[in-house]
Length: 89
Image (cartoon, rainbow, N blue to C red):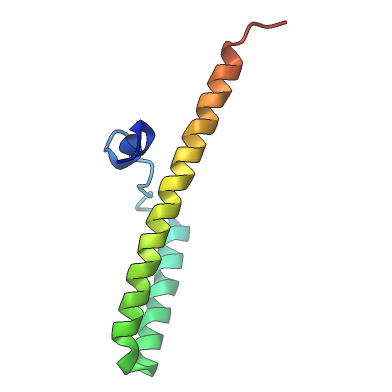
């Protein structure tokens, strides 16, 4: 872990990445992904290993981006708090 903000991101203090299991948009998009994956593998069965490698790399970069966005958002929130604590002129 690099800093306390990243440690907070990896902890289970907030459940910020949980989705509503009844969220229609999430389910619709997930079905689209599953169908596209099935079509790709059925069309190019030899590409399964390469596709899996792609998914792993994509997931890893997504994780790095989510962590970065979390840290930036947290810092922005802290800047808002610091601004609010300044005396009113």
